[in-house]
Length: 199
Image 1 (cartoon, one colour):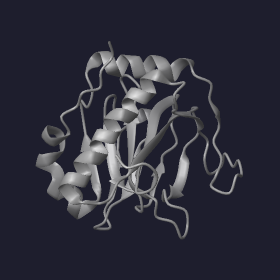
Image 2: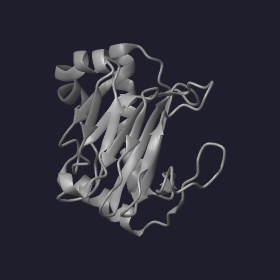
Image 3: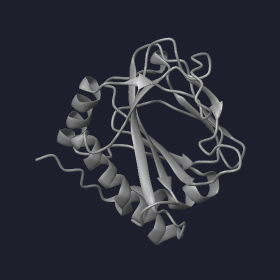
């Protein structure tokens, strides 16, 4: 049986002050091997669709990924979302930030593509509170590209390698981009929101 039990307190408590000051957080070795392998397998056989910008346009010079939203037809992804719901409860308990729901999609970037600078809340909206990206590729190196670059709350530019079993967490209003990848890159884009059903 695939389980996604994660002790968010153990992972985040030592880094919580850093997250409060910078708005970014990097968590490694998030899930056990069997859960990680199940996510990798599911991400490899689902059908992806071209991702579009907020207003519905497809512009590969800005955003080159294909996506598959996680729903009830993604049994392993649904278990991942349950773990993310627990993460939302953790942030509500520690930071009182009113997270009420989560959403996520698998993302696949072909070699030669990335996603230019953006924030995760469209202009005038603030439903997304915390963004996160979980990485699924084995043996990723600096020369493979595909890093996420974030401008944190202190104005510092942070660049993070898409390392297997790593969850990068950041304030949804921070500007960020996905650098051009040199090999096919699989991840799960994730958001904790302040609308919809209460966690």
